[in-house]
Length: 65
Image (cartoon, rainbow, N blue to C red; front, side, top):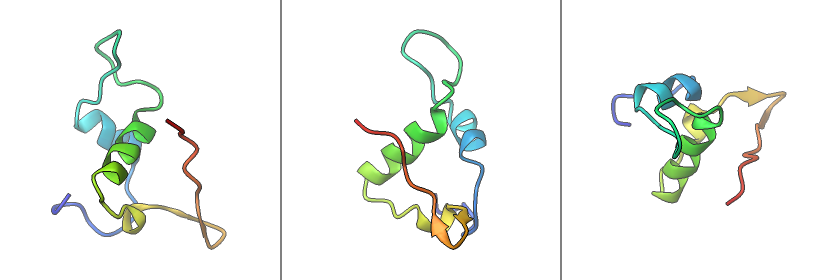
């Protein structure tokens, strides 16, 4: 995280880069980006500097646990 630039990132690319894997196979799941974001939030990381803005508003996190 310390090496990440404070600008919007590609969450899907980060999920692949950190080898986020599904329970049943060896590939990155389609919602790997959401899994990564949810994990970072659960660890107390403020991900807002890395989020893209949509019409002046943060894109809502649709993943629920």
